[in-house]
Length: 351
View 1 (spheres, helix red, strand yellow):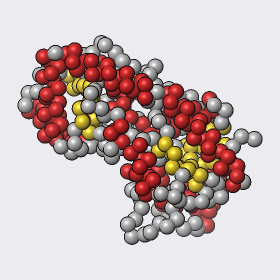
View 2 (cartoon, helix red, strand yellow):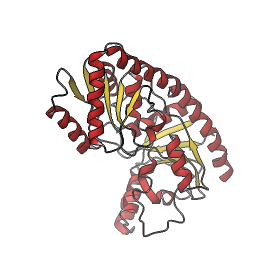
View 3 (cartoon, helix red, strand yellow):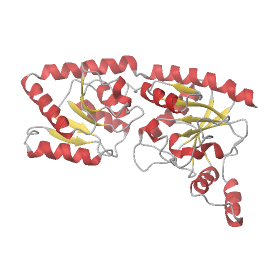
View 4 (tube, one colour):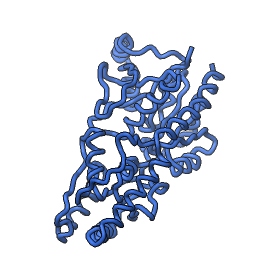
């Protein structure tokens, strides 16, 4: 019987690259003969702002246990009764399964269903210690626990971070891929600048406001990308000449990569994880938090475009080619299968 792999997945109210990647992992694994499932809290709920069809199971029980654990709630009679009732409506997870947790569930992941092997899909290493306390040693934690089979990361920066923090743990790196059927190069550009306002909103406000005060955006359209479907995001990026990156301490940072794939000239923060794809020849890196430099580089790039559009458009084309070669679905699928072919035998060994 195939080992069942359950990816614990929160339901976000907004579009999230992290959730999309979890869905895509499940899609890839099932396509390649594994038995993988999304595990959601609310029965009947699924994320639908992207087009990925995967098997979904539900466990209100597991998510309730997470809630009790992180609020340090003791299990009294009434909570036991609640757990019993939720168990009747939840997926039965055997000890021969594997639970895959995102890093956001913090330092007690190993305490949930302790007999079941676990993998941590850590998409942002800079969130790893977000729920840890500096006043505790955490000598045993999810990343070095003997029942944790591996931690999967998505960039060279994240690999270095996790190996520094957990040198004895099994840290495996996969390459993320962009779906080039959706995010692909377009020559039909408009004088349009797009950006995602959800992170570093204060920096976004400062940069945009200064540009407006200086009259630097005359003739240009500003388009914020928020609460859009995957296809809507791609359509905006394809029409845009510039994409402003407000990456902030990212494990990888997918939006600038998607923008590059659509032929945008990307200006802005790398957020650490972006160091591997923010290349000087087709993007414009700004030191994190340097508002003055950010504004100046946007103005400089606009002037270059106004003088000779071909120079900027050619850089966007080069960026798209680079992403197509290095961050494609084939590479992601290959890495996913290779990683899980290493993990499954470890799980079987522990049975």
